[in-house]
Image (cartoon, rainbow over all chains, first blue to last red; front, side):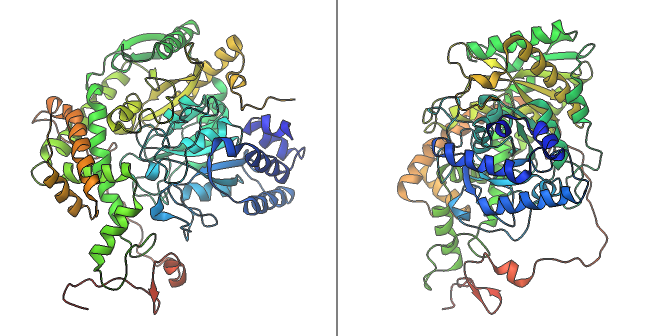
Length: 500
Length: 99
């Protein structure tokens, strides 16, 4: 069954439709693969073999009846444990929600099911999606398949590790400050953050509601686009969902033409502090796009220098409000209810025990930034910076079709290196945050490995809101040209499964 | 350097409903100070006449028709509750003077 594992998601979907392989066989192959390697990687929090196989048999039966399902019908997927699932626990990697079984499906979950995708299990993450390394999970430390001593990125690190270790051909993630693009970059994958509101937040456990955006992980651009298309689009249950057609991302991924496009290199997102191998691969990729007929210009977005600061005030402020719902009354953990304590005491004890250190830190920071006397200086100023960042993007997109930068300042760092230093951990999101604050489309595509450590480097492409297709078009050009020049990148990953 | 005192941290913990222990208060006082120093950059960039953005996209309120829809059953709604009594959420006492 190594052939099934080595196929791309689009190939596997086509093979299932053609009757060459059943979804049950494909799902079995992936479940066996998870059993064989997840002891090394720790990508999954919950795997439900029987549930997944029942879903696969159901899809096989629907296909046999001639039901019209999408091009990914029958293909297995790993689902981030931040989306509610009515048939599997959902914990957001927090002790607060240990074993919690939601009574309903998130819209993204429901759309995966409608498209016939088979959910293998739920992936590890930083608790409540707060982190850049997945070390903040309350349950386990996920390892980067390229080098198991290094982090897989975060917060969607279980999803990136699962796809990079060939434990799933596809995965979902959520991106609030880079939580899809950064793990995709450091695991050598394609990861997309759709336009804010382009994918539904209904049933997504909220971290920072004005920023949270579900998106796809895949091993290639076309698969990512197909998954993007499968779960995106207007959702009346999400009040900030955009009522517009899903951009033609699949068509763009197949097209990959950049001739005549104007590409802006963001001056502020590439500096001396970045790892040399990252800068080198980034510059080579820009030259490659130029050689393919794109026009390259340098663009200055001066407010981006303050984006990280604004983000680390806005996101914790929203989080401190969102996480107030964990009050030990209606669901989740309750600690110390011995009959003598008041509701408020039980609430405070539960929250102190149920939340991990990073979550507490952000709740405290957000509470500070929103409190009387500090509000204007912190939260208010951060919101003004957000306006300036949007203006920088708007001005840039008057002259260029897309903006590009390295996705991350460095390749995957060693596990434990930054866990005691929140400020240095936050720097991992330096390049990804501007697109969250402005809500535009952004994507990371692999652009080689850094010579000094052999770890993958990500190339970030940013496009205006609702022009997600441009990110896929440029990514497809990068992917195609690099494959011609260097061969398949993932074959240098020790957990990669090549076709027989 | 933005200094934040241990008393301020204790006050924030009360507002946040987090029963933090002594060592957490000490650690957080130092860490919050470091983080606030690092993010104070927003004050250098932001100026009085720039309108704040709370959101990335222009938004208007969304309404749906006022029609009844199926929701969760009481059993589903209570399935994850820490304690249940008579088809209700059972909670600790809320008013201080009651036993």
